[in-house]
Length: 138
Image (cartoon, rainbow, N blue to C red):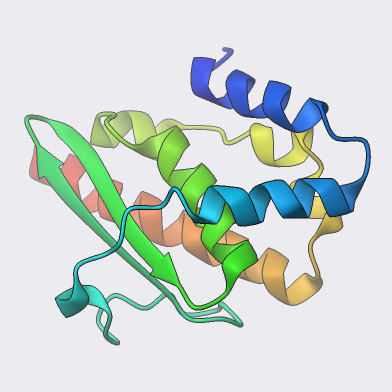
């Protein structure tokens, strides 16, 4: 099933032919990420398996999951901004079941270094774990 937000992201990235331009766009996107609360910038919220430091938090409001995050690496921050854009404001179960096909469609996985790729997998896993925890409470 096509997902509207993932389709929008695929279209946005289709504009760029070169990967350097896509990286520049990721850097731009990093500036759209709302800041994570200072009390969440600690080891409890850090994602293991990322080369750079990434903090992610999630909250449940009216049956929907909302994420906040930050990173000390600008490209990683752009990637997490994309993940949040796709997952935010959905039910926990929707997030758990979600196939993030935009990652391959925009060529992200094949153009990341192995360590960044591992980090991407770790970020997705952590975000889905938050959703799973909320889903099991429902």
